Length: 376
Image 1: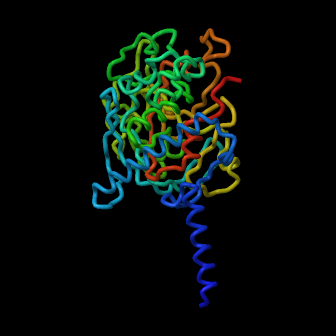
Image 2: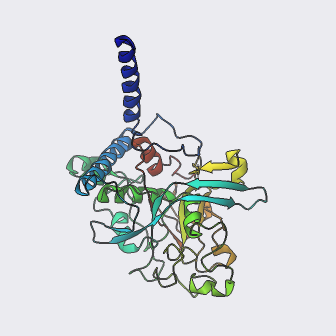
Image 3: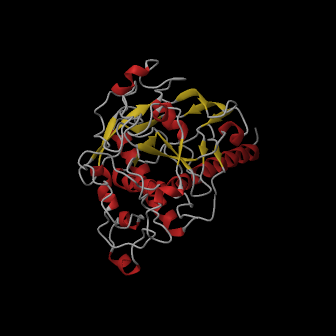
């Protein structure tokens, strides 16, 4: 082989490596995700992209530190616990990923889904973990960004993350607070909460996709709920069937599913990342998908899963799909209505996931910034 040919090959390899590094994907190589519509590669909000880069670097640096302290070994997919600045803890359980048959509401809506490994919160996010995010220590505009006169006084980038404005009334709706699930946040608020805890912990957090949520709820099984085929045992695993005199409950009082997750059925509804589409097979245009995400293109409807304590057994099943609606803000006196609160949902909460592979900066930006947070 001549020297010029060898030099040419070296240059080609170097170019390829640099391209991967610039894309932030060298260590994250794997099957391409089925995300529709595709994630934009430009047109980013300058401030939000700056924050995404800051948090991405913190996460990557933290992973390298952990790797060095574990003799160069990558982090294992095992249960762990993250402690927030407030002292609140979030327990995370592993989901190994795999394949399952995803059946929708339409007879022909059947997809073969492959999911990569991830961690999911053992419980719904509590008020103790969420309220410090909701009650910002500095004044904010309606979009959650700091007031202009405050910007020069801010010393920590975490305060530049958009956060809720103060609520008009207690978001517990007269129910108990301590140890109970946080309630009535919009999907946008849930997304920014994930960004906020990612900054604090050095781990990337986001909402689960609909497919991830259902796979974890089914404990990786093709069909079925936590109670198996015996609906008579559903009450051992799920809060459901309540009336107007009942209320939400402290997570973890019922039995967990086979993967250890509590309250995947009932108690409070839980946000996912996905826009609701009636037929997912038709939407993706193929029968097999990998890490699917129906990315939002409008404020409503989004998919919420799990049902709540006042719904029927069918409505709290793993397969049941619920849709967000503008009626969830019908009591909001503001015009335009708040980006942060659903005033009529005393049964709406969230649970977070952490994918095993760290996303690129651009992907993080899209997970935390839907672009459709304002009501139409």
